[in-house]
Length: 248
Image (tube, rainbow, N blue to C red; front, top):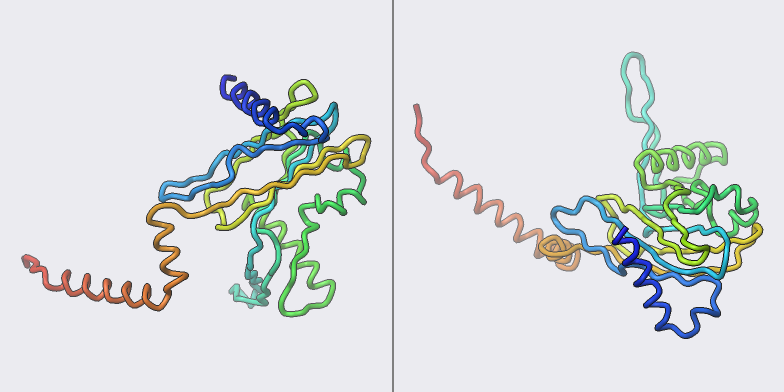
């Protein structure tokens, strides 16, 4: 409870510093603009605090950077299972979380949900190689089922808490294996089935410590990094071979 009150106090303090906040139907302030991934990183709790101009429903969409994924399908050949077709999925976000104060389907009509991309299976995905419409649809559905099963795509209508029809806190749990990059946080205020407030923010996920140094070296100086890594492995092998071992 103390932590919750502290968040609400910070929300009010931040808004009082912005004179025009009262004229906006929706104001959102993320708790942090950066998430650092260290050696013992196992996920992170991120909060968004804000205010709205009276009763209404809220929807928060968290979208991760785009990714490429390769899917393959195994086929049965007699008593054995062997590798079958393989496709590459491009353009889909690595993470898609939909938070709301009520089931999204109950507060927005289908046209509005499609307009604001509030469907887990509605994000655009490019499939290579080109397939027939029926085959592409099967692969697309399999991709979304896999992302949902892994926990990267999901809906939650209990993560946003509203206080006095004005202030709100959204609790967002990020998984441990986040993709590096910029994540978008889009907040919608809905009244009578229409979006009347819209706010877009972001936070950045980056490596920290030795992981950041290794990642930068591997990507910015790949040839030098590979050469030094190979040399280090050779030296280690030589040292281990030179250590005398007692034979029974």
